[in-house]
Length: 468
View 1 (cartoon, rainbow, N blue to C red):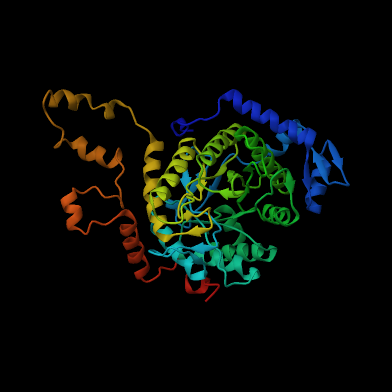
View 2: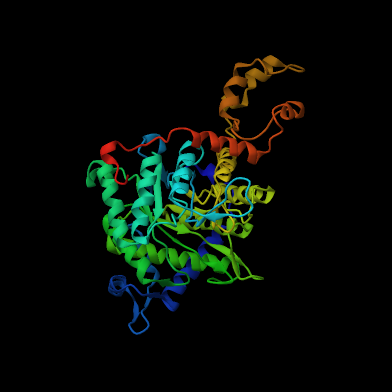
């Protein structure tokens, strides 16, 4: 594994061991509630203590370790094009969108509006063109559809408008079956989809220390299907977890391991991804915050915990709590993406497009965040020091007072050592004024407009189109 990605480590090795031991103590002594009947039966078979009346399960450390040991150490989220394959657990850091947001912010407007199906299609088309966004996690909820129609319509849009990996939350058992059946048809067969799964599902857990009936049912259904599955939980400091960051890490770890254990009992070897959506609350208003620096700290620390267990990681960063495309929108997204990226998280979701406590998506923010992610990816790579990159022969040949403008290495390393922006302005002021003195959000809006003016590109053939 490329250790260069672990440049930021908020926890010491002793901290990691202490959080692990605290987690094992909670699972064995306090226990957790299981409100899904089939899941309760699975846990009863391995539990060290069972409270039938209160549906509380207690499990010792040895059993926890045995159960999670069958979880794969790598999970590949395949694209329909091999260049988009993302191997979680390989040492690389991947970035994607996230949600599911209810609103859209149209450029130049102060008020957001309810999102519809067309918005989701537009988002996917923009994401497909953003080189630094690796995974398309379906980020908006089409408000005009009945809940029974949402899953198949959302995934159909993903399969139609991008050949990157498509991940999404699910809302009904029927929808899960429909989504998997669609993907099997596109792949050519159920076996072909399992060999290169280009879709994955998200089933959320409920903090603290609780497995609910609805998402427990979805989790079991997805695990039986053998499709890659992210199992995020969302402890909130001061709300559903202790106010201390360390205490929140314990709840986060307990809840995620509970979900992972269930998937492995249902179907050992299920390609499961440890998920963290942990953040904090504004204690003045008792509301969720998407962008505090503490969220970056928690998600970065959780990267270390998942590396400790050897389980691929679905983390959170890149959200802004700003309501508009301002400086706050940029610095909040950049700080958390950088912290979690440098900690070596396998997949950072919510990394692009989300604002206003994750309630709202902006197409222009997708473009701006694509630029931020490009810079973060460059930072993650670090500095390659080798005989070639030290350039000693070149330095000696050029000598005192010389320059390196015409050097062959200058052209070579300009492309490999330096990030080349697609949005940022680097013109002299006079040229910037001459070209319209446009701000970053204006340039992003022009890029979005150009993409959406083009005829939509479909990655499905006519016979593969499920919804017309």
